[in-house]
Image 1 (cartoon, rainbow, N blue to C red):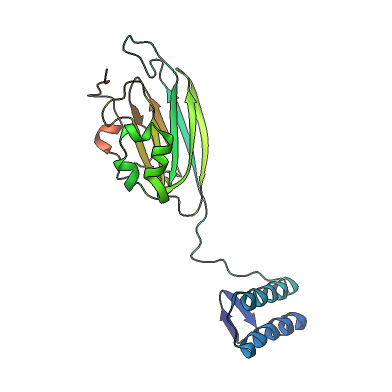
Image 2 (cartoon, rainbow, N blue to C red; image 1 turned 120 degrees about the vertical axis):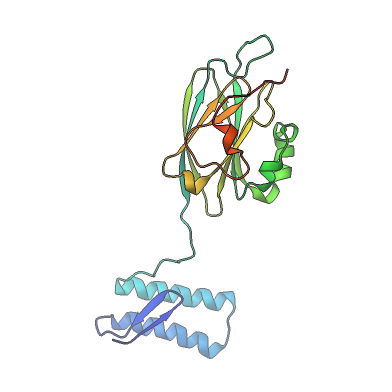
Length: 219
């Protein structure tokens, strides 16, 4: 059985392929060839004819091999009882800033002074930034947050806006696709974040991010 494949659409010469579908489809392609026009309007016209012919024939176009599905990741956050403590040890609520990013390069270089200022953080991340949202954590509470990163989103960055942040322990970044199966678990503490489940990206030091050992709050 002969067939012609063009732009992920299979044109079958099988007699079972409805005559009206073949006629409309080939007519559109011939019209484009005769016109010699490759402009957007002509391409759209042929695309519409292809879709109609395929609907009449009961077949579907082959999926675009280059397209990526959105990445779904479950984010689980545990806020400690001694959350975001003051110098006197009083726990406070904590703003957790969650970024969806195309890569982690600018995020990895972002200082706390920039991250704590929303406009400055957005300006630094520029084209890397897809979306950002703030979540207010209450001491002793747990939070479950489903995230869906669109095509091109590869990294989930998290910043804790602590009262007295420990050096290098106020942010984490995760590889979204590698974390999609088991999800991401984060602990928020007096002045630091810890990573439980989830695949850390290159912007986060793995050896220190999963423990509170050596953490000192800045006062």
